[in-house]
Length: 106
Image (cartoon, rainbow, N blue to C red):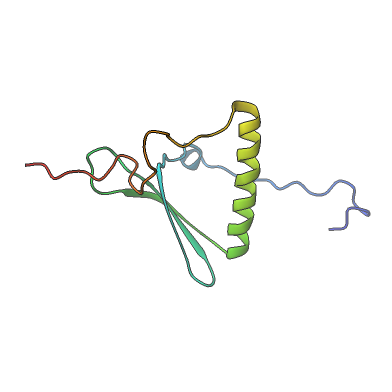
């Protein structure tokens, strides 16, 4: 759309159902890719539970993945400008399992 001919471009309308609006909690993400898509699994890990439960899977094109990366970075910059720098925990190394690997119980 040429903005010179139409100074008021159309606005995108987005429908959000109540079920989707509730959202899902995720503290663990798995990202994989092929030559044509990125797959992002959002999961939850709970203390003492050796298995992560995937709550949502998003499949996007490489172009959209790069756009997501840029948009997420822009939002993190704005968040840190408003609320302060996001710091990883200093006393623990970041790991695949944020609660550690559960030990077998007798």
